[in-house]
Image 1 (tube, rainbow over the protein chains, first blue to last red):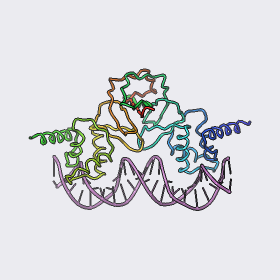
Image 2: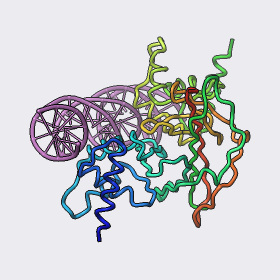
Image 3: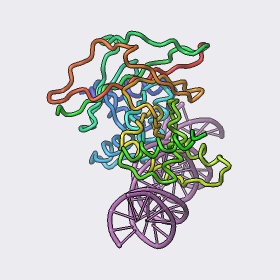
Image 4: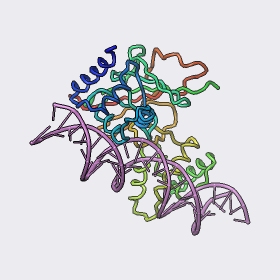
Length: 142
Length: 142
DNA sequence: TTACATGCAAACTGTTTGCAAATAT
DNA sequence: ATATTTGCAAACAGTTTGCATGTAA
């Protein structure tokens, strides 16, 4: 029965730990994003999702953009560009790969440790590998 | 001495084979793109590059966009999104991977056959792998 | 001479920003 | 009381499009 309070407290703590003030808007975003399931979405997706809640309280699109940017800088989200044109956010901030069904616009995570990439190239002098992005793109079987 | 004519003829043939009329603008683009070296560039990059030729003749930015789109649909170019926000074109249309130095904004090709990806996941029912995009992102060594 | 390509400007999408009002500390 | 955050509208980047003019076949 005190469930809601506890979840809300967890979000508040998460924000504070990240150095972000727990505003109503940020808590709304947390409430939607951090429910245990990994999510992939654009700013527009999140805006639509939060707007259609009948509660009446909402947030502006500009705040969505600012919030997502802040969360990303604070390490609460990661970003991904599958599309060029729009930026995808991912609640999974660990290093992982993706599989993308362009038709269904469906993006899922793949564990790095399930896959192995052999034959990595030498990187230029003074450089090192930051990370490796892998996107497996699928299409309907002919 | 007839070198220039031959190259120009090759571009003309390439366009015609792709079902595209060899206009002055498309030939200019070919002249810059297909010189044997693989190139990675944005529409803006190409526009700047072709604009600064002192010849005087030039092309509009809209034509650059239309031309690049047409070339891509005709299979003369491939595209790539490293950045989200802008679309990169690649003169290498075979299946290959990339290595990207975000600092220097430098993109290079990697041979698919030099690398091997093990542990590919099962794809959803009725789907098959279209292609796999790999981008190795490098950064200065700490 | 006809279908297609070009160039310009205007439209459009995704994202950022300036600033006054609201809110967290 | 002070520093941040919000929301709006305006600005911005990258890209596409409508339409009159120009060009290839």
